[in-house]
Image (cartoon, rainbow, N blue to C red; front, side, top):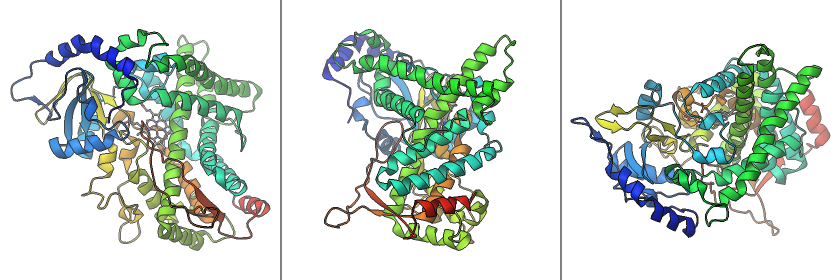
Length: 519
Ligand code: HEM
C-alpha cells in the first residue's frame, strides 16, 4: 500500500491541501458532448487514488485496474490527472502516432532541489531537450555505435577477468562493465578494472538521488510544491536534508568527466566519443556555443546515469534466469561451443549464427522489463481518444510490465522462454520487444549501445562460465527466492550465486591467452 513518508508530513499535507484538492477535484472542465474521461477507480478527495496503489509495484495495481476498467485508465494522485495505458496498441496510437502531443514529461519539482534538473530524461518537451536529444542520437544511433564494438568487447573481456578473480563480487563487476562502457563511449575515459574513482563517484550520486527521488514522493511534492518550502528539520523532509549532498555530487558528476575529455582533447589523448566528437564541432565564436556546451555536458551526464544501472540490471536478470532455468543455460552454452569452439571467445561477427542468444536477450528485456512503467510522458494539449477525454498536462504512464505480461502475445508470461522469439526454422521473429525501450520521440536513445554491451557480455559469459545456486557451509544448495526492487527501475535484489569456469583448467593466464587470440 501507499507509503507517504512520515505521519508528520502527511498530517500537514492533508490539513493544508484540502482546499486546493477540493478545488481541483470539482474544477474539472466541462467536456464536449459524447466525450468522457476514461473509466477508472473512484478517487478520494485530497489523496485521489493514492491509497489504492501498491507503492512497491504500482504496475501490478495498474494492470488490475486494466482488467477492471479497460486498457486506458484515468485516475487521480493528490489532485493530479493521471492516465495509465495497459495495451501496446494504445501506447503506440498515442505516444507514437500522436507523438507531437505526448512527448512532454510531467514537471518533477524535486529534481531542481536535487540539482537533477539537467537530466535529459526528465526534461520538458522544449528546445533544451531537443538539442540534448539530437546530440545523444548522433552519438548512439544504430550505425554510429558500431564503432564502439572493439571497446565493448574489451570491457567484456575485463568482466570475464573480474568474474574469475572475484566471483562473489559479480554484481559490482556487472555494474563496472556497464559503467565503464558508457564512460568510454561518452567521455573516452578508461576506467580501471577495479575501484575506479569516477565510476564510484557516479554510483554514489545515483544511490543518493534514486533513493530520495522516488516517484511517489515526487508525486506528493508535484501536487503540493509549497511543501518544499518547509524547513529541513520538519518531519518527513528528509529529502531536503540530503539535497545539499545530492547537489554537490551532481555537480561533480557533470563536471569532472567532462573536464577529463576537454583536457584530453587539448593534449590529443582522447579517442572518438560523444563529448570529444561534439566539442570538436562547436565553434567557440558561435553566439550559442556556451548553450551548446552546456547541453553537451548535461546530455553526457544523463547518458551515464540512464545507461549504467539499467544495463547492469538487465545482466542481473540474465544471471538470475540462467540459474533458474539451467536447461536454457546449457542449450545456449552448447550452441556457442558448436559455433565458436573453445579456442577463442565469441565476437560480434558470430552474432548472426547465434540467434538463440538474441532470443535470450529479448526474453530478458520482456521477462522483467527494466523500466516497468517506462518513464512518464505528459500531454501537451487536451485530446480525445476513442471517445475518452485526455486532459492537457495529464501524466501518461505506459504500463510496459503489463504489456510484457500480455498472455495473448506471450503465453505463460512469468516463464522465461526464449523460444517465443524464434520461428520454427530457428530464425528470429519480428518482435524485438521495442516496448522495453519506451515510445515515440522519447524512446531510449542509448538502446543500440546497450544492446551491443548486453549481447557481448551475455555471449562471452555463457561461453566461459557456468552459473548455479551457491552452496552453504554444509554443501547444500541455497534456494533463490527471486525478488525485485520497486522504484523507477526493476532490478533484482542481490542473490547469492556460484560462478565457475566451464573449463576446469581456466586460470588467469589461460583466460588472458584466450582473450588475446579473440581480438
Ligand atoms: C538495458 C539498458 C536500458 C534500458 C532498458 C533503457 C530503457 C529506457 C526507457 C524505457 C526509457 C524511457 C523511454 C520513454 O520515455 O518512453 C529510456 C530513456 C532514456 N535512456 Fe535508456 N535504457 C537503457 C540504456 C540506456 C543507455 C546505455 C543510455 C545512454 C547511452 C540511455 C539513455 C537514455 C536517455 C538519455 C533517456 C531519456 C530519453 C528522453 O527523455 O528523450 N539508456 N531508456
